[in-house]
Length: 61
Image (cartoon, rainbow, N blue to C red; front, side):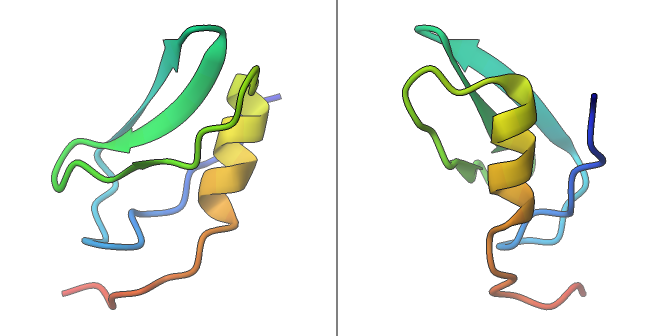
């Protein structure tokens, strides 16, 4: 099941992608380069949930 990703907590961009490296997944912001959180053997669903659980540190412009 796929989840809608929340905007980047650093730049509020919705230009996001998910990459897989060494059997783990992480979310990447295409605008500012923020990525993560990354845990060993993380699935796409776990990467989405971890990204969405991050605190918002900047308001949208």
